[in-house]
Image 1 (spheres, rainbow, N blue to C red):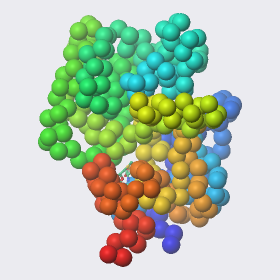
Image 2: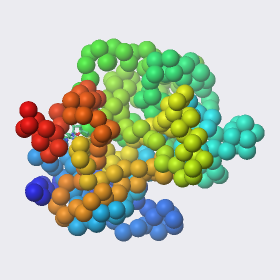
Image 3: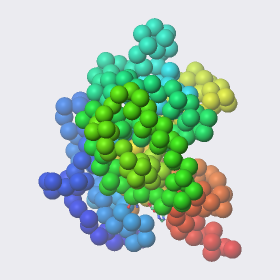
Length: 324
Ligand SMILES: C[S@@+](CC[C@H](N)C(=O)[O-])C[C@H]1O[C@@H](n2cnc3c(N)ncnc32)[C@H](O)[C@@H]1O
């Protein structure tokens, strides 16, 4: 059945609409100066999952619905010297990182990172990175990148406000204390003034982390050649398979389904592609799968409840519940 869409906004026609910026990611990648036609979607309210993304026309199976560029991304610590610091593309070790110590794959990526990277380079991140490494933390790296973008004027402290926050337990908040203090002291030790880091309060950190927690994507690049697949298989044995993490605007409005009709994938960089997995009717909600769909019902529910704070009532989960 096609759910009723309560229209929240027409994201393509109204000016001064916060959702307009959500669509910035669909510039035609092959010719960046030309905008591709708007994606066939709109953000609206669902009956039980808050906001969601809906088709505004029929979408065919396999169709590329839209692409999305991240608002913030960061390589995983194990990929710091093997992935582009901006687009997370695999680096050619000898030419780029080792020879020139520049962690970018191209002139364009270096230019796009210039403002926040100049800020970041002024501080010594070794203690912060070491803490993240030993505690297995990845989200504070996204906050570090966002903070550098804010200080350099490339972003604002309110950037994530539109995203849904997770409900954090007091224990989770307590655990954030150390990483927050380390982030702040790294800036202070580098000589940034109180005025420059005035936004960096404990409450801001908690609010940002609460949004990153349920909206960040773990980036695993789909690899092209057989050689790459072999290398990746070897790498995943002794290192993290994810090349990094990223936050997007529009993809953050996609709800979850254990039998999704849309797939989000990354071919060679952090720029995401959203593709229809089957024919989708106009008005139908578009949903992606947040987790490994091959897990059994109970494992899926446990991860969704713990990680995202909801009990999934999608058709696949409900079928299983009815059988019990
Ligand atoms: C990434 S956000 C998706 C967009 C969100 N609905 C909003 O209004 O911004 C993830 C959150 O949406 C809700 N959600 C997503 N899929 C859901 C589902 N299948 N059932 C219930 N809630 C869901 C949960 O609150 C979840 O933590």
